[in-house]
Each structure stands twice: as C-alpha cells, then as structure tokens.
Image 1 (tube, rainbow, N blue to C red):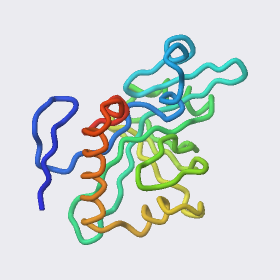
Image 2: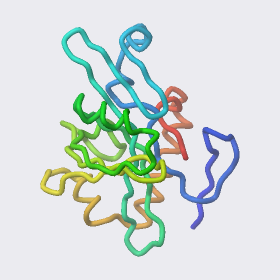
Image 3: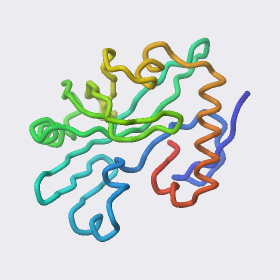
Image 4: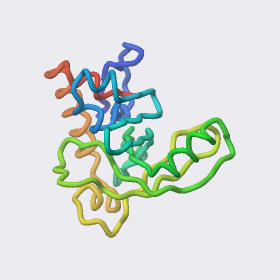
Length: 182
C-alpha cells in the first residue's frame, strides 16, 4: 500500500514514505517563547541553549529504522546532544565533505509510540559527501525503541507510524513546527 502525504517543505503531495523529522530538539520545544528568543539559537542543523548554569548543544541527524521484509527503511530526522568538544569538532568540520568520525550523544526527541523516561545513548557517525550524521542507539540500553531498532519493525508498523504522524500533525497545528516530512 502506497501512502500519500503533503510535504511541509514544498507543499506538494508525495507517494513515497516520508522521513519523520523533528525541526528541533525537545529541549528547545519545551522552552518558553521568550527563552527561545533570548537563550537559544537554532538553525536547520544546530541548536544551542545557554542556560545560566550550563550550555546544551544539539545537532540534527538521521536514523534509519529497518523495516523487515520491505526494501525501504523508515527514516527519522532526530536531534542529539553532544559534549562541547564533540559539538565544536562537528561544527568546525561541517563543510568538510571528507570528515568521518564518531561521537557519543543522547537522543533528544520523544518519538510517538514510545515512552521516554530518559534519553537514549547513541553513537553519532558523520557521513562523507555532506550527508547528515547517522544515529545508532547503544544496543545494551534497555528500551523498546532500541529493541525495535535492532530487530526491525514490520511494514504495517512503519505505515502506522507514518499515518499516526500525519494525523497528529493535522489534528494539532502546533505540532507542525515540531515535525517535518522530508
């Protein structure tokens, strides 16, 4: 079954699976509007929040969810937090299409269908050619999302996630600024 969706970016109807992408980390989404304007800086790839006692740093990445018995993966556009050292290294090499490295990070988006009592630790792998880094959750972390990442999900589950996201966005216009379909 092919699903159609209206892309938030171009406004056109598409028939392939969309990537389920967050426009910002949850840490940014939960800020008051005045704080978004005073202590936070965000772009399509970077977010920095300067609290009085700490600075939080985030980058936008991609996660590919295996769909068992299907030729396509379900793609997520998610944010991870990085240490200052890793963030500065990534930022310094952002335009370097040959830069390959790994960072430790924490997943910073709550994905619908899962409960997140805490962030999921992950390895962030930079990609050559200017592609966004790929997130690989740590396999030894006990969480249903991590389990699904390593065991895969069914095509039906993937299509339900897409349908639920589309419904959530259409039912709650405020969420449109949080989600984007690539």
